[in-house]
Image (cartoon, rainbow, N blue to C red):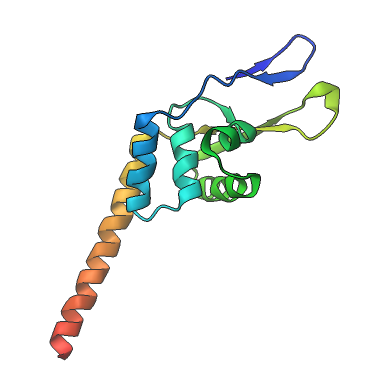
Length: 133
């Protein structure tokens, strides 16, 4: 949770921790060929709360460039929204805050559709190979 104090400073109450559910989610996403940074980032965002990129780094163990790459993928799919908040009276870079724009069920449905389409393509290739042999 992000807290903006009366003086305009931003602090992050890092109550978020990845538990068994989030780790299982990551493992299942990895089995579906979702890359590790995206899987970890989705698990961090899955609770529906707004979370900073720095918090995602701390909780997931990802490095900043990995979080940025994952966020680019999530933004391209229109699954996440990003906003910036100034900190410390304008000193330093703004804090980037992310939140899912769609339900996890919608993301899972999209992944499912992609897996089914890929599987159909693989089966068509196998059938074509059989016909050529």
